[in-house]
Image (tube, rainbow over all chains, first blue to last red; front, side, top):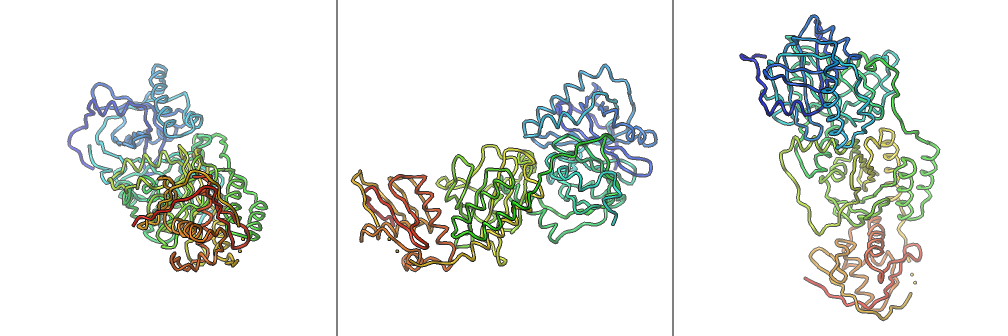
Length: 158
Length: 440
């Protein structure tokens, strides 16, 4: 995997990422064991080169353990309605365990996700059960970006 | 092979998580330690220690598993929102065989439901060993509702099907069985026509519009494709699956004739089960169930309907062909214009489409005899042997067409009826004068 310059997220991609979509986060241990967990409410700071994303604290033990030795991370964001999907990959540059100030942002993103999944017939109660209130914020620099929409173009660099 | 007992959560204890109602996610790692994560439509449980993943658009996942066979899947139990992590080790890829065909049919059928073809090119099915399965987070989670299959009720319906005296009883019993055993009132049954290329709806229950007489070609749409492949297709979240197929679209829609009767359909289908009725290696028809609830039909339901479907098929193909006789008057009311189009054997009553094909030809023949001879009583045998109809030598098809014809008449008018009078005999009831005209 080679990419000469860091990826910069433009305005339209930022809007998509922050829409309140389905998010999955992957980390890997030093011995190559992958770990997948839900991500919530990703946010793109103004620099366009980093992304903040939240994971449930109760599910954070393995990802945080992975990140101690391997800071590489992947995040897929998918719209449950259109199935448009992207994947961002990079390196974690910050971990924040106290996210009290982020609660409103996280809640908004989750509510957006709840609305979109309800529109395609998912049980809102079951969807609500997917998340927990306490979260951890991960910040990562984006080094690679891919179109992940199902189809022949899946995997194409953005 | 490891066993279920070695996993913290036995795979068999979370059947709903494998229904694909909510997409799972899979993570892999490349040689440089960079993870990759993507969504999966369905994770199939093969046995207590193996799952199968469809290879569709997994370019990076595939290349990662070549260098590092480890993967982790995040499964969601749709009723509770409980999630499970499965640690997998890639073992092999299958590119043919029954399991591959079954997955291919399911993917194609969902695309076909949208009128699309050749969307999902299933290049293979990855078979993975499950090394661990645990709830995430590690809390006590309700594994979800599983339908309680009542075997004694299955047996009771089986006996009733075996005892059925005619085709109509077989069809009604099959629909009642599906409705009761699966707790789902929306069922329709299609039979293969004499050409062997199309199915037509001969019975339905639980729909605002019965769809009687609606047709579908083999290979077209979800039902047609399942029929062509002789494979059962079960879709658990139609809204999501259709979104997925639309996202991958290379538009290849198949046109629909506006004059066609639409298939029975609920306004917002979420779950669908289409099961072929097979007897002596041949397709007899399809049993189709629909629900507006996602995840409505589970794997056990699929087994039950498959058992019923094959028994219906055997009952229909072994139904004795009877011979036989019978009478009545027509009232004085405004005449009905009955128009028959030779081209496709379609019949219109006062310019309203009624039916076409074999059933249309039969009705036209009966009305001609009635008009010429005043005769109202007929036997199945004389219809079967009537050279003008040129019916194919498929003994069960005539009775199915008569059932279809009778139900269409009941839906469409109040002055023409076909009533069964004895085994192999029926009565044409006409209560208004008819003016027959043939086109072509």
